[in-house]
Length: 402
Image (cartoon, rainbow, N blue to C red; front, side, top):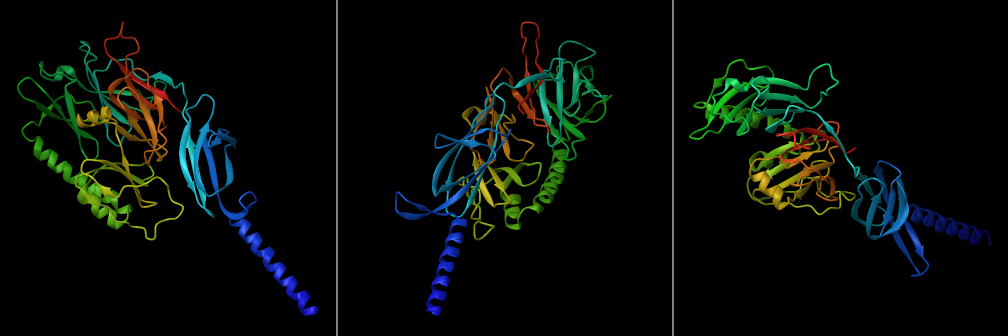
């Protein structure tokens, strides 16, 4: 009897322990189906917080929220009054935790003028918070090329605009808006090339101090560009050292690296040839991003590579954006959080996750499609003329989307 009683106790203990372990690992008894099913957890957060969470169309609570659900596919939507809504489909598997971190943007963005000078053309200075402004309004004192520092505001001790070269320095037939710029590797100099009726003319200019005289480099431009390109190639190779060796080698040979996220965890690139991207992390991460990736790289297509999860995503562009890209206009920039891309789609500007999902339109108001940028504090910069009846040329505005 004593032995039997001990055996029963031991068996009961084992059953209870197994039940506790199974419950902790997400297994539940489905009374309706009469079987044990595995469950997982969806952890949903948002910026801003206390946003409503809908799962398959049903309100389940507000962020931050942890839901234990049976395995399967779920449509997640996060909403908050006055903000864009965020949507994503997730596949939940037993014993796993899936995270959904939604960033919402105001429906009614604020507009703040940053310049009042009247601008013919804007060119962002790559990898800096600065831009070149080309002003040509028939004012001999104000017309010229300026550098605009996005980090400085009108209330700053230092003005956001600094004259680099007066229009009067250039030949009379030069039109400041008909210009292209090639930047030096350190972004302290630029080759400013103007188109003219018969031929183009180029000047080497300082981008930090006012140029009181011009240095024409039309005949030597090609050799100067080649020297700069070699330096840029060395810099790109250095930046790629933080990425896995297999990827870095392929990237150096086959990709045109466009930009890295601020935290250097992801890279936006254009394919220079068609290749298959090998896996670096084997076996594959279980609780990784669920968006289908693309390892078959196609020529001239855009991709984002996430080095933390060794996943590669194709970035699609609208027909309008593709035409803009072909003419040299900027259509994609990183948002400061390193998790989103900002897309310029002609008549509107949208933000997507770095895997090209959860698209949200953040601005569709009037603006000149030739320029847009994002500041380090998360504001959009656009070129717009909000009063064309009185103003001939547009100015730069900050669009508050946070």
